[in-house]
Length: 437
Ligand code: PLP
Image (cartoon, rainbow, N blue to C red; front, side, top):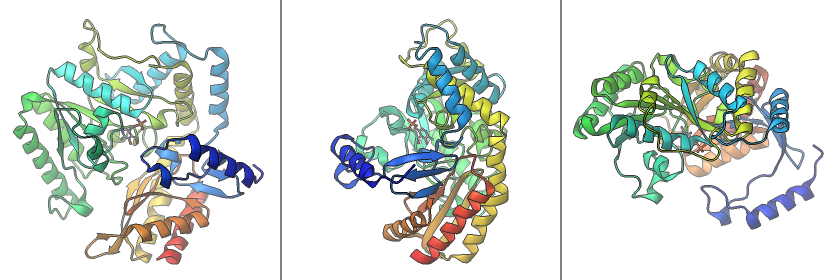
């Protein structure tokens, strides 16, 4: 795209005038106009290009303008743009099959939504209807979406502004060894104590009233927290003991982000309900949904499910998902994410951590990484906001676009990033840390 600063200025001006931006004080926000993207890079109108370590909102797993996916969307648009859920549709049926084939056995049905928050809303509604119970337990270190129920489930501070939210939601602490709530010093201890705490929470709430426990198998926005050994298995066992539904929120972790189709599969657990969105079609068209176990599904065989959406299983969205999954499979894109994590990003970040005192911890897997920046390695005091902003700015000046979340940099590139691009991006981060701190 040729540089066109006048166009950038015009887009900025119009946006400032008319676009109300998510999560922002409107007077203080001024997003960069994007001109284009390809693979793991995007560029602006000023002639700057960036290696993308954000995947937008951690969703462009297949990368920008994947030619086969663009062609599939164009082809689907030419066939039939829209079909309501009151008719069956080929792309929808095909997408549901491809998604359920990647889930554990006996999870054969998919309910489609427009995005992640609606998936979460419907998953908890299904769990409540199936169990006849009303309470739902969710982790404090979680983000589940911005509709009323999903934001009530969300553990972090973004929930506060909308309280009191949906009744019957109880929060618990999940594992996070680096800043352990449980004074644990090993992953095993953290896992055991987090499970004991969750069990106490369930007992204190009356297990007979608990419909579901919802969690992100690898926590995303709240820190990229990979669960310690035994934790997810323990949550599954606790749910089994008390007849509680285990909802795995795979909206961010799913469809390649962790180097697997679903993150929970690394630990061999089978959830009762899976929520997905984002990576299912890399956001080329809005789509989310719930994968439903046969047991939960049985509750709605003779009794109608109370819920629906005009765009449930939208023709273009589901056709794009079917194509995206097929392309990811054909081109080994999920395996690329896995290898990039284990062979390139993980080792390169470990080297950075040895070199820079401001790095307290690096953690992650696949294309799902966090660099925890600290003011002091001993006390683990988070690095101040101004310094984090200086590092981010220095990264951008070097053509690398990270995703800052409080004192952390999340490095979450598209699954299609090459080893060379990953090395180039992390070298830019290395220089940025030296220059800014
Ligand atoms: N659940 C998780 C784990 C998420 O990360 C997100 C979005 O970031 C959501 C749900 C909400 O998805 P959406 O923004 O598509 O509604």
